[in-house]
Image (cartoon, rainbow, N blue to C red; front, side):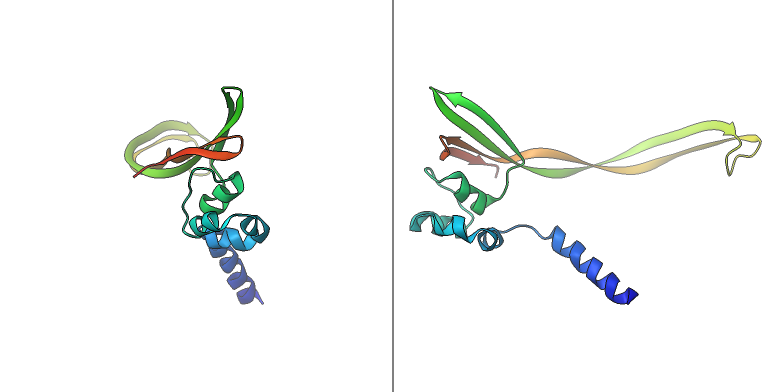
Length: 144
């Protein structure tokens, strides 16, 4: 029983880490996909967007944005969707302390510890943005 539970939990973990694809999003929301025109359906299947697409079409093609911004331009409602990625930054840091007390390993005396440790920090960056005017794609840009 424990072995089965372990395999099930491992399977759930792997499934939750799987990237979302246009095909997976289409399967989750077939009504949104069927509401699109033929040209936009073809683009969505390829993970591409074009001017005039609806927010639903962009969601199906590229997925949920990392951040959204709302605004106004010439009296019209605007929205910007930003998509983010992250890149690792590797550093080596010095750490250390000196102290005493009655902790588990410091009974009655002063002990210091020092060292260098590798550290990885993930820095977010903007991968793509889509600008909508009244819920239709006006323009977009993507990092190369």
